[in-house]
Length: 288
Image 1 (cartoon, one colour):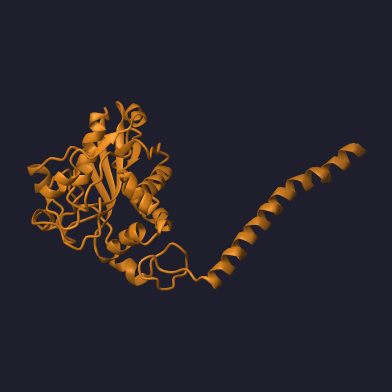
Image 2: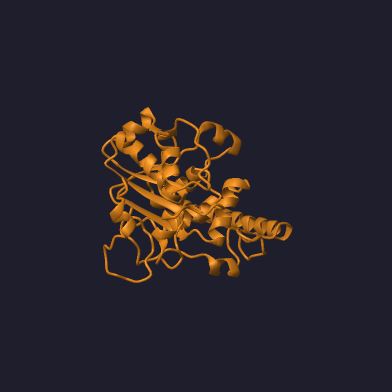
């Protein structure tokens, strides 16, 4: 009986210690974050105004960011000005059917999206990827059936060496983690350097990236008979995504689905195809 009485306090103590340790660790993290916020106040991801939480936009920038919602083209995800019913396809998708099955984007490529894309890509801000990737993952519900392989659009090795990271791969990693999908950053390779796409027409963009991608041997094995979710930061004319899609299909992918952070389109959806078909804006900071 005495042994049983002696054991009970020790058992309770053993249970309390991990709980106490967890509380101390949580307090230490909170205190450390508070001290860091005092030393380096969290700033808006777009304009650097002070915000309450790290990884957030200020109210002014948040209001300007335009998330894409239905109604939109069932294939390209281009927003429509009016709801014409489910499954409606845009004129562009009908006139020039893409090789990929479906494309979606989180936001329209407007002033705030432009800043976020440029900062991640050109201002050494890989810390933006978790936030942008989380927004992208929220638009992926139509794309994740069939357990697709998540593959980023690759950079050429020389551009990767200069930039030090592939922004598409950072986004793809977070999308895959959010949906518990397999992430394969080396499944595709860019086998030749391509010039910047800035200022090129749709046909010139297509010529620029034609034959630029190839599945790696390991990537081809993983893609064979399986859907692929192709990830990039911006969908402009679709030339880069179409070239990468064809490389995946040649490797045996069952189908290819596309997800990007931003979509270049008319904010009201009424003239999206017309704006893009007349030539892309010269100031798009995109070098795909």
